[in-house]
Amino acid sequence: MARNAEQISETLPDLEAYWMPFTGNRYFKKHPRVISRAEGLYCYTHDGKKLLDAVAGLWCCNAGHCHPRIVEAIQRQAAELDYAMSFQVGHPKVFELANRLTELAPEGIDYAFFVNSGSEAVDTALKMALAYHRLRGEASRTRLIGRARAYHGVGFGGMSVGGIAANRKMFGSMLPAVDHLPHTHDLSRNAWSRGLPQWGAHLADELENLVALHDASTIAAVIVEPIAGSTGVLLPPVGYLERLREICDRHGILLIFDEVICAFGRCGDSFAANRFGVIPDLITTAKGLTSGAVPMGAVLVKRDIYQTFMTGPENAIEFFHGYTYSGHPLAAAAGLAALDVYLGEGLFERARALEKTWEDALHGLRGEPHVIDIRNYGLIGAVELEPIAGQPTARALKVFRDCFDAGVIVRTTGDTIAFSPPLTIDESGIEQIVDTVCSALRA
Ligand code: PLP
Image (cartoon, rainbow, N blue to C red):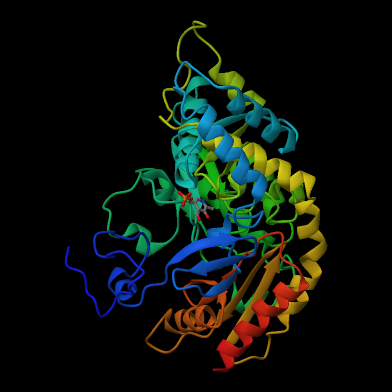
C-alpha cells in the first residue's frame, strides 16, 4: 500500500495495512504512537521517547515490562518445546500451572481450564455454566445475567452479557436469553469514594426482581466484574458482592467473577474474590496471568462443577470445547514465571501496602479543573471528568494525548481517565503520574 511520506517517520514501517483494534485508525495513522521497547515501569517509542506506563500495558503487565525472569522462561521454553497438541495430549508446565493457580484461588476452586484471552475465558465460562445445569438435569436454565456498563470481551457470549451499547449495536442479535443488572456507579450518591463506596449494596437486589420476572428455573448464571475496569473503574458497594452471592445461592444460580483485570495483585491480593471474601463458582482471568508477556486466559472452577462433568464412559470427551492453543507451552512457562515473580517479590503485598499512598495521591486531584469524581481500590484508580458539551470523550482524550506528550501513558474510557500501574510502581512514580495528569487538566 502507498506510504504517506509526510505523515510517517523514517523509522516506522508503512502503517496502512494493519487494521487496529478499538482504535481510531485514520487519526492514529496521521498521529502514530508506536512503542518499540519496554522495561520495568517504562515504555520507549520508536523515536526514543521514554514513557511511564500508568496502565501496565492494558491492565496486564503487573510485574512490569520485560521482567528478566519471565523473559528467560519464555526464551528457554521456546527452545525446548514450542508446541504440544492440546487435545488428548499435554505437556508438564500446563499441569504445573493449573496446580499453582488453584492453590492461589479461593477455597474450593480446584480446577483450571486454559484459553488464550479474557474474551475466550468468558465465553468458556458461560458455556460451562449452561452445560453444568444441563448435566444436572436442569436444562431449562439457559438465561445469562450480566450488568449494565460491564465489559466481558468481544466474543458473542461476552458481548451479550456485556453492557456497552457501542460494542453491541452493530452486531445483530446477541445470545437470545440474556438480561442485565444495573451498574453500581452513581455520581450523586457514591462519588469520591476512597475504596469501596458505602452506598449501593441494595442494587444487588435487582437480581431478585429478575428472578421474579424470569423464574429461577430459567437462569443459569450471573457474571460480574468485581471491579469493572474497562468502563471506567466502577466499584462494588460495601456488601454488594456478598448480597449477589446470597441471592445466587438461594436460587441455584452460578456466580461468575470476571477477574480478567482484578486478579494477580491488581486488587491487593491474588484474586479479588480473596480480597473481598466472596467466593464465586467460576473465575475468569487472563492479562496478569502471564504479566501480559504471552496471551493466556483461564477459567477456574469449583470442584463440584468439574465433578459434574466427569460422568459417562471414562474415555469420552466430557466438555466439547477448547482451543488449539489452550495452555500453550510459551504461555504456561510465562505464567509460571509470572507467579514466581509475584510471590517471590511480594508484589501482591506491595500493591496492598501502596494502596493508601495511591489513594491519597489520586484524591489530591480533587478540585482540579473538570474533575467530577475520583475513585480507587488496590492499584486501580479513576479520575472522571465533566464531558465537553456535545463532545463526549473529547476531554479525556485530550488529557490522554497531553499526558503521552509529557511522558506518561494513561488510559481513557468515556470521559474517565483510568490507571492501573505495574505493581512495581513506587512513590516517585505515583507522584509523576499525578503531577502529569494535574498539568494536563490545568492546560
Ligand atoms: N473481561 C474483562 C473484565 C476485561 O476487562 C477484558 C479486557 O479488558 C476482557 C474480559 C477481554 O479480555 P481480552 O481482551 O483478553 O479478550
